[in-house]
Image (cartoon, rainbow, N blue to C red; front, side):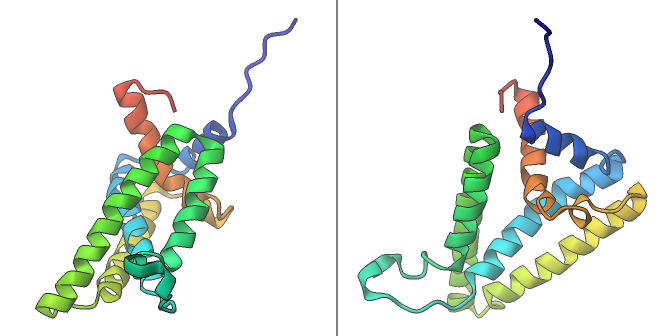
Length: 168
């Protein structure tokens, strides 16, 4: 019987993603910008107006367009790796708390609306990403396959899991 190594889909995605992420400066930029992009995208989608439903009670404001984005992303991550999906779910909860805090700051202190803060973060973070890829000399992976927009955040997590000795 022949012993063959089968690459899991998540590892195949990580290997493909890594092809355009060798430069240390580009990798550092990704460690900063990818989480900021996830946060800002979540905030931007969170800000899309949805109708108020009485049956939701106090959950109104927490059930929004971002809920569907979160559900889609977590289901996709679960298909690839349960531990990485749980890590992303933790990140999403922390980011959701940050978004709610930004909304409160706007309401109480007159800060910029949360969606404007997120839009600024989003634009600056993507500018950083493109600068990183210019330094790398390779185009971003998502230009070949949009799935890589979802792979970036768990690619970072897989390094953390490896560092602390957890299987993903």
